Image (cartoon, rainbow, N blue to C red; front, top):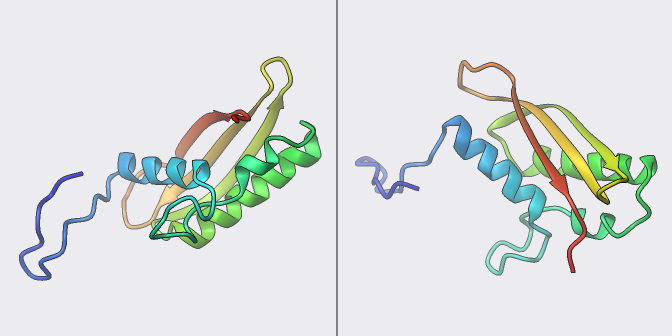
Length: 119
């Protein structure tokens, strides 16, 4: 994060590049609601789903939870598709998020990561 100040509003300049948006999406997915002290509404409810039986129904629940979290809390993106695939060999849920960044003339972006239950 840069600590540059906008000369008109005296606010910090927001990062708007593709890396900042990808980092924000990842943080939203990995944060549970209530986990941040001064922003309890930030995040979703993914961690609880990771302790359910790993099957296609749980993958669908993970997809819907991620979609809802992103649509509500990240106005900089137009969500195209969220795909969660159970990886039975490693006991993880592979997630792929496809999105476009609003206001930037970039190709469709893709973010991939694995969700695994952690105690």
